[in-house]
Image 1: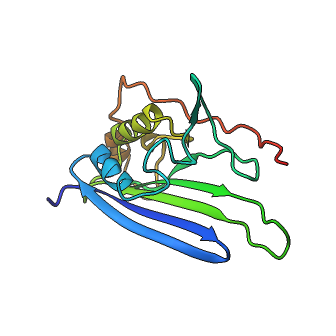
Image 2: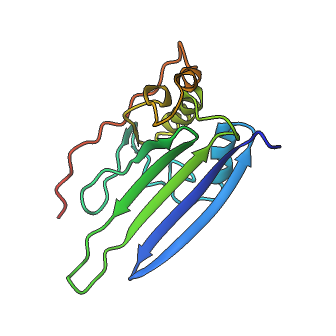
Image 3: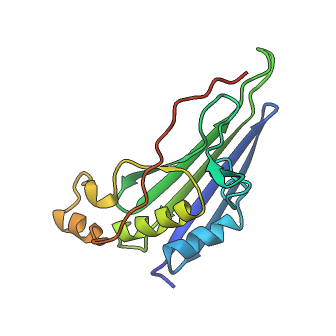
Length: 181
């Protein structure tokens, strides 16, 4: 039980000048199980059909969804320390007038490895593959093994590089903004 992955979810919906915040947490033995558990508690990353961060199916093709500002919907993967991996997304709108407030949606998924262990390339491979197969747009620059944090041992960096031979899904290429009427 003590050697589990966990994920914290924070969804913020901003409508009419009021923030509606949903926070939740899930724990499991595998990182993909944690993702599946938190999806059942989420509104914005629950599935590819209702998420603004996933491609929408039009006929036989999948297309990126754009918000009302003309920005594409996607999750950005980032890592601020060896044990935590974060996916963040933002979906916004334009205010109708200067007297109105623009609605928006923010989501943050914060994954944490088992106590004493960092997030590895294999963990990231499983998450990125799951998101990719389910048509989510995920932008990322580097894998965990391509980062060395301040005061992190080189041995720890080597341990993170455990996905040899695995083919990672491509990073989402952020398209230019669309012109919105």
